[in-house]
Amino acid sequence: MARAMPQPSFFKRLFSHDVAVDLGTANTLIYTHDQGIVLNQPSVVCFQKHAAIGRERVAAVGKEAKQLLGRVPVNLEAVRPMRHGVIANFAAAEHMIRQFVDMSSTRTRLGRRPSFTICVPAGATQVERRAIREAAVAAGAWKVNLIGESLASAVGAGLPVSEATGSMVVDIGGGTTEVGVIALGGMAYSGSIRVGGDQFDLAIVNYVRNVYGVVLGDQTAEHVKKTIGTAIRDVPTERINATGRSLDDGLPRTVQLTNHDIAEAIASPLAHVIGAVKAALESAPPELVTDIADAGIVLTGGGSLLGNLDRCLSDQIGLEVRLADEPLTCAVRGAGAASAVLDPHAFD
Ligand code: ADP
Ligand code: MG
Image (cartoon, rainbow, N blue to C red; front, top):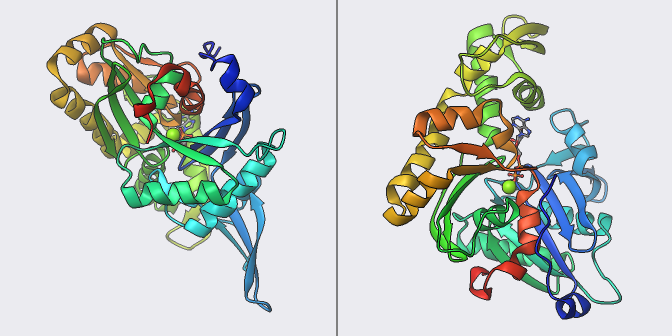
């Protein structure tokens, strides 16, 4: 169950129409105080090309478009507009945000345009931040506040962000891992690496190609990871069949993979994630590190659902590690509640 989120004051609710947006590399979520999560869709948009008139139109977004990734007919193109938490394809991002805002019916309420609070990775540059603002304004936002993803995730995970005690949150998304140390309503340390669930999928594709001579699609690799993936090897064996294209003859071939295969396949991106957490513990102010040693580390983001990741991190770092409740929705719920618990300077 999600924790009860702090609510904005009565007057703020009366006069403003606040919408929180988590524009993730893998998934986009939209949240309002009144209705909770009003949209949760893969960050994918599919265009149909009209060769005759030289224009494109949006054929599908979200779940429908994700099903088309890697299997589109010639006149369609499925695009993931976000890479590593920032906009990689501006036109596609703008179309996608506009469609999602329409689907969530948050464009206007009682004639007022929404004010967006959008999560951004700590590593996003000024240019990347401006691109996100502009895409949101084009999608109908009246005002845009940006909030660091770690801070939003920490609020969403129910950590005591406003207190002097330091908290550490590790958000593992599709294309980034964000490590944040939070105290007194602000970031005392933030680190961001461009490694997340996508890099785990890619590592599985590479491993299966090298070891079994079979090329899997990205979505097959993701399915394998979600079904039997494990971060540690000393667990009972689990198996799954996966079908790809044989390197020998180009024909479809099914291979049986074990969870131990997956642990080996993802060892390298996983080491980067562990390295980012260690770097944060080495660089954060010593007093806060003492607090974190007492309170432990909280994991959020979809990547944190990888089997035994909490145990793996805990073994490697020697601290208690726990998974947040509903890790996939922490950031957007936190962004929605942030204005009620944080000072205005926490926003950009
Ligand atoms: P983002 O914020 O970047 O959009 P999310 O927090 O939505 O990312 O997480 C998406 C990532 O989480 C994807 O790479 C997805 O494969 C991964 N993921 C989701 N569920 C699981 C699971 N059960 N096991 C492992 N990885 C998972
Ligand atoms: Mg995220």
